[in-house]
Image (cartoon, rainbow, N blue to C red; front, top):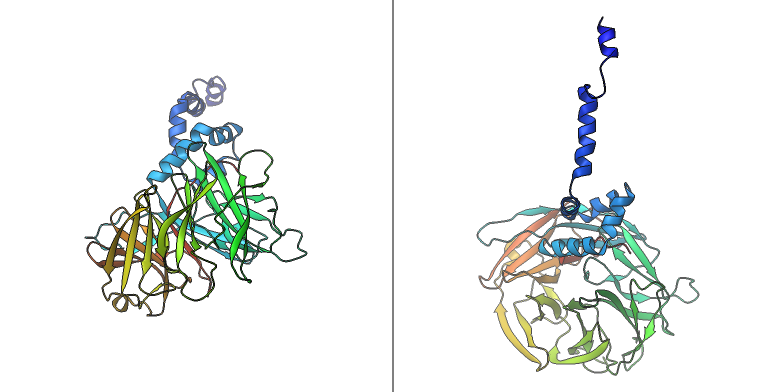
Length: 404
């Protein structure tokens, strides 16, 4: 009797079938804008995995509207990025940038491990990210190498990378910078060869490559400012800034100036300023800022003061400057007097962020409040320890899911 009843049960009357059918109908009836909103709240790492599950999803993630919306939302929730290069692989970790409250002691943050990116490039220095992409900044090429004069652009959030064609240069040493034009919505790579082992030092063979234009190729551009460039460029509102020697780079204790490169017009312009080699360029609330110390070379436990210069008017070359006398905090924080710290940037709450240049265990970053003259150290947990490994720390990192 029970078997006979079961035989006459229809699919519509079967609770399990009805539930499954309802689920499918509900998923198909979700408005496209709601699906769009849900996806835009996920991480770039999650989206890179979901891209492989559905052609429709992959199409959504690749659309211009979605990628713009995702980057805009990522800029509103910036992250700290930690990355280093070991044995032909680029390792990267990130964590949401913690909201700093001077009245509360934030003791630690935990990082997420991004996708490890393989690379055939040797050891290289890394520039700060531009809208989620990383670019090597200083490269040497060996004679006779088939991959000579080639470089790669990385997206640490998605694990994607793009090999660029060989730069057109006769030299074995080049400097590269990555910029973004927000008007034309274009990434551009600026490359120049440098003469380092002979004097006078200068740059030559200036060229530009525009990403996302089909077949990639370098274009030679004119540059009358052939001053020897340093590592540490920063792109703010479509203008790329980098440090360069004031003269031929001969001698000790050289002074530096700042060169502006307009990413859209591809024109160079110098700024009238005199900086030391210990200076670091930062984004100060949408303006170019420069931090320099009383100790030439780098910021360390023996540094007693620092100066903050802000470019208020680029056309008139007007800068404002403040000097801060540091408290004797390093000894109390357990920082070695000879430890080398890099300037990561400055928060909107007037805190300068420092990070060690060498990975340690435990690993700390430091927040110096210039208004209160206090410092807080925050432990970063979750980074795989590699002894004596250089590590690069960046703030205001915004993830990007645009396909490379």
